[in-house]
Image 1 (cartoon, rainbow, N blue to C red):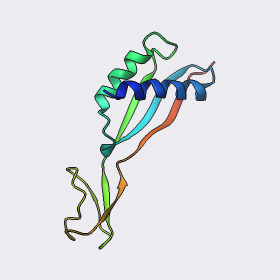
Image 2: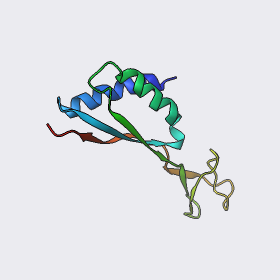
Image 3: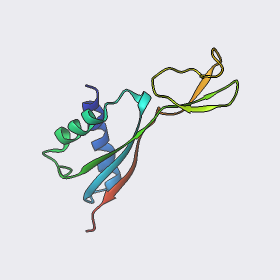
Length: 112
């Protein structure tokens, strides 16, 4: 359950960027290939923030599907399964275009 250590790191980042201002929500993007379980991340967020100034902060997770681009034909496709292969050009190398992200995108800060 590496999501727990990820949430601990996120708390540090949020505190740094909030600079003492109250935080209402944290928005993150999680790619399908990142090996982070969004429900577990949400649960761990509540665990690491429950006794802190971030206890009421909501965690909003945007799930980003994995998308590949074939180097041979240039076709882009969202993956249904973690198979990094072009359905048209079998055997051609592909690049992962989306789906490897893990980003804190925005913080919603309360008015003080």
